[in-house]
Length: 292
Length: 199
Image (cartoon, rainbow over all chains, first blue to last red; front, side, top):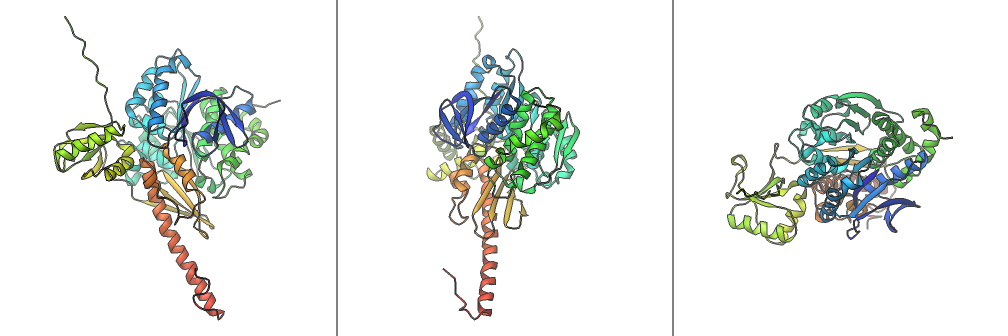
């Protein structure tokens, strides 16, 4: 599994390698990254999952970018050049400046892989995949309710420009947004819609919804969407079916919020630190994956 | 003999800066290219045309970084418009009251502050690379002391966070005003001077 994204440290060099945890930080090639909202939170949740499942830890491709885009462009170019050689089983694309032309070139390069990776996108990588008309090349998107409205809007190239009536759509009406997104070919094969109700959608059909435990404060905590994507990626890498991976990730995230006694002031490492306990207690029951 | 035509790199920017005068458009392109932005001089489609016949196509997500650069370099422009859709930025915000804290959602961004202190507790949502950076810059700061996201961010996500920030600031001032009024009312009830406790 290869996880690609940016970290908010401007001069952090483009760094490929295996990631490890060190207290609340990540270590990649001896460089330290704080576990904050964004790709670092995604990697941390993926690592917690792979450690529990006793499968190899994720490889990561990380670069510093504070929004100016220079790091993101380096990351795209590296992937375009090397992806067929790297040929990961699961490719996760995350925080990165959305550049349509570069995403198109990357998808062309991915076609050259000996075996097409399972492709997962969240955050701006999901935005650009949709804007470039490449959503159907992806296996999993993990939008929140606003991002779901963005996927349903045929014209928007960023959630800031979605139609107001779509932004106003209540999460209980997600089915309409799902129908529009699939009709416009703006959705991945599987969607995990994150919100007060989590929806797991495959090929346009809602397979399951997750509502318990109900922890509304999770929405305020930066990184709770990233941790879901990290877990989905790791469970997929461990060869669970895509929809099973999504359902378990959504449940585990909510349960970790409950265990952390989440408030609007809770920080994402506090949620991630609960994942091993959640997996220990519930994973066997939820998935049939029982560690002995 | 056949000559192979060199394949041109296509640029898909999805946004246009419109200008009153051609020289402004040319200056804009020069300024942006020297700052390493990917841009292209184009003729605006008739439906979007305002001012002159030349526009600069940009990667729309980089809108606010470019606007800030134009301000620094004195580049005049009329407006920035998306190439698709209605062209209106999302203005509406949604507010959630958690009791001790308030969360404001603007587009894909959410900002949460403590009702009693005005301190920013959390920022979530979004997907552009400046969001984790803004997250680090804003958290644990008072709304009145924190930098404006649009002054230090570069992307449309930062612009949405700025919308949420402004709404939070307004709500905080409103809440603070009510708290001060309640304090003054209680103070006068207890025979304390009306301005007791004001800094």
